[in-house]
Length: 100
Image 1 (cartoon, rainbow, N blue to C red):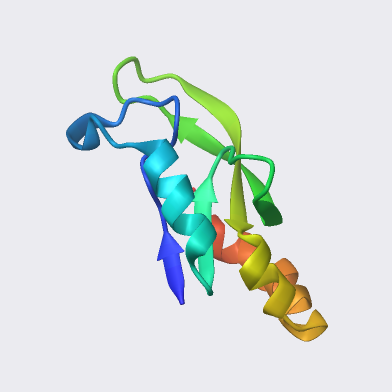
Image 2 (image 1 turned 60 degrees about the vertical axis):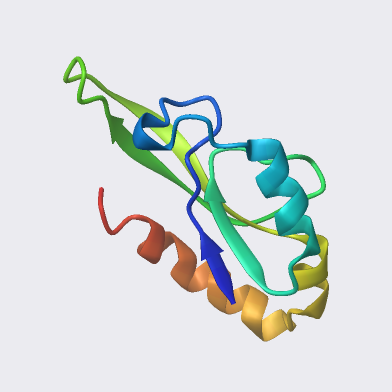
């Protein structure tokens, strides 16, 4: 399994400046067992869980709400059992909010 937490598209990538999201999406589509943490992905990726969280901006000290989602590709989703889908729905939000 791959769990990917790439620089979120449309945000300040910091030390990952120049990250090629399109290239990453193409690579992710070809994987057999992948999950990706992101705010938004292309329409062919499937949301398996989401959670609203507070995002802090270090630059100005302000915070705002954002919806972080856990995505997978069609290959991975197609191979998941109903039990696996339920477990992700039950446990995913708890795991995504560890750093809130």
